[in-house]
Length: 630
Image (cartoon, rainbow, N blue to C red):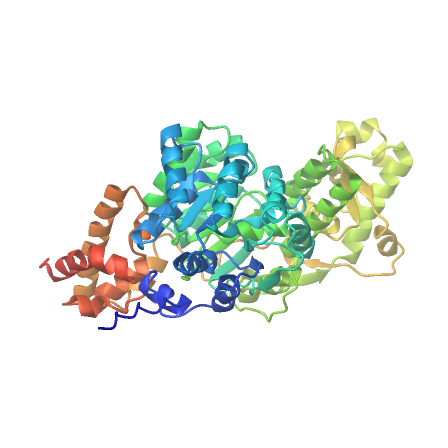
């Protein structure tokens, strides 16, 4: 009698469907997975929400099934490790993490599991990878042929040119040096050409195949408004556009974070503050609450964000300008991970420019070269803020990607008017020149504007600046209008703010052509102070249909009742498992179930997001919830 043949090994597409519940790969996922499965090194640039984790999780399963052992995932955050491992367990994949939250006994038990080849994926922080104990463990696994793949997540952290440099990532070059035959995949959502090249050199990925996806997130609407009263503008934006929806608000300082969170709470919103000055346990508690509760607004410094997988963040707002486009893109990319419409909204003013320039110029960076690169990155962000073109064209162009006007940003929806500001620019530049010529020193923006507008303040009289030819020549514009002109001249590289000289203004070489009348200066009309951040539609509080409402608008009354019951059931399961609700099932999966109204397990099969393990674990309960009478 012949022995039965073993079942053929599962292909990557089989695993995608049976384990994760998705019918098809997206974009370059399949090419990446197949390349890594074959043992090739890869550098993957894919936008937030593009499915980066599947690019190493599926190869890990395939290679484990083929006897290659464990995939080690280097991840920077404990919270991210916890949620990703929980999600893998829900999908039926053996995974674990090693970090500082575990006891010595727990770590030892996990190490024994690894040596018995019982795990498919192991998550660890970069700091741990470089410890003697971890090096010894990896060496033992390698000797036994049980070290399958290294996945380096958030790989931009290795570069000093990136927006989130972490020195501990530099030690990851040891992976190639110590285990040259073990393939590596490095992944990030954001990296310009300079950062990308630094990643390749630091991680020794010169021979890796590069996979660069489109950076476009078409579901995100980009809006940048002139800052007048930032907190009031923010509150109006949330109330008119995102009442009751989850969002993240970024501020520059801890004090500002606390103030804004308090203001939003006073206005009746569910809001929390998050910054590095809080106790670590309180930060973890608030992060968990943000991930698990609906309609929560997190007000934070950039200490919050990396690894936040919450799919239904409907908006990301910046009350202060980030340092560069990479940071802006990474932070705004935390909105709309579920593919539904989301907003990236930012207020921007002259003081933002001054503050960012000061932080660069007064930093203790090791070289002038570093500061110069950071200034260039800031200039690119200023250009984005002042650009009259489509925001998306400008943003994608920074990453070397050509595109067409999107029709879904503020500049496309309400094209800004431009005006010939040559005369105003010449007045401003002449005033800066005359003041320095007369006094031998430079002065700040407020004083220059007093001179332009003909205000005989005590300081103006003290320095006899009322005798200058530029005194009063700008009386036709208000101070707020002159601030707009100055901000754009700084953005255009004609004026700089000197942080070493009390934020005084100095002319740059590009100003000479304007002063000589050789070039004209076209500026956004909003610099005259008339533009509003309100939509032309004049949305009022409570009149907007939420994204959640739009997504559920196609469901009939019966389906809506089923969806409500399914969400209540999902919340109970998530609490029992100590996981965010979306790890159990995404909203899109619940909506599909509610719409299909399944009567049998067979009718649940094929719904996106339901793999074999989840069907076994939850199928009968889902059917019970769906068939229960309201």
